[in-house]
Length: 540
Image (cartoon, rainbow, N blue to C red; front, top):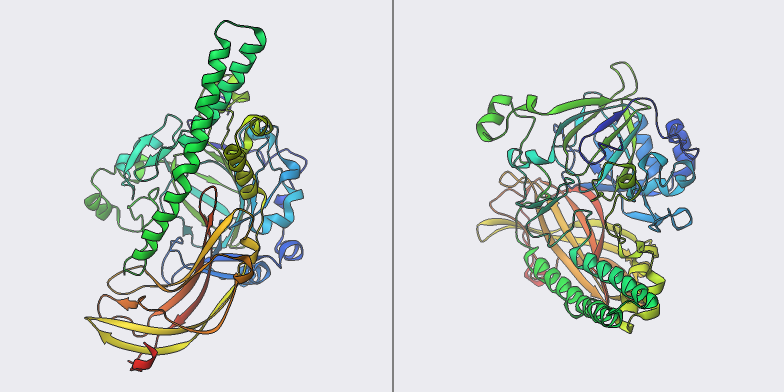
């Protein structure tokens, strides 16, 4: 596994991690209810008659309620990635980067290793729990990830169809590839400059500049010729990079967000992530070949299956379609896996030396992982100190927003301007005070409807929004709110009557320093009236 670490998947058939912390293989639903049943989870909802999840429709419920659905054999729900709720600062690895634990695993963190010995010096990005129920098989759709993966299967089976990163042009990605790094990391147009280990190129330049500063200081200490000039140049370069990050980066991010929100009220399907394939494996193989002639057929890929007690190592960029299903035809239909995502290594040296240092940069996935953060503070300008403090705040601040949305009814449903337009009334209770820190400039909260019509498989339309600039105003209690003008809830035709819809409340947090991040909760589904309802003009 050392020699092939960054090139091919590896099935590990002789058991899970040997770390003494690993106890996940023995988790039962009753035990999970006891330990984490109160934890609120966002659960994907599969549409009736469809094999694939990943349609963006989610439902929030206590984990205990989800487990009750699993025990009842409900195959329409799937627990996947969650909002990161805890950072394992007390168990951080030698490189200094705390791995992030998601969802119910927050309450089980003592029962699995945060940095498994098997992974060597790879740095965890996210650890999450996958839990579903499917006897016939539920598909993930063909896609690739931006991280190195380890799937540790506790229950059920997982079948993988696999294609290497170099097959990307034959697999019809949704996005336009701009760069394929040697380790398999793919960068798509619109994602900016991203390095092979997933680090933003600007952060990488700052880390490189910091390393050069350390080297220049050491040269000065040794009295090398020209060391003073080298040190002065290194200090100038580092200050310029840090100031550049504050001059435009975060302001431009929010400008882009405002432009995106102005367009959010337009009808249209939500863009699928660029790392997903356009190929639908539910189609007959002949139809797949007709629609996607560059695809060389299912036989062109590799395949494998893992069972309870086994693991799959999947390097970054490897395309995979995962079918999750029961252990056997007569056994329980549930499937449970613990999934580790690691920052992809960019040092492909297959020797023991390369295994010991898988990343070529000290940054190793994040600004906070650099071993010299304290030294940065001691010699950087005030602007640089703000960068570091903002980054540490983002990593260590854990928010617990309490959000609920209720559908109170329809104020109107009319034919207008060649389409159906609905006017809905909502009850919104969103306590967002916990997302505020010293570094929070403002929070943009908005509610959007999500629905399917005959013309568009997926539609999203903003119906309400609010900007909050002060923590004391961040508890939004709106017992009855009408759809806001000029937002519309409409169909490009006459297809809204009788349609089901969800409402998702989103909050985008803009910091004074750093990048915007978001949270969201979905509610529903509800159904629009089968009959048109005349809207009173006083309610427009």
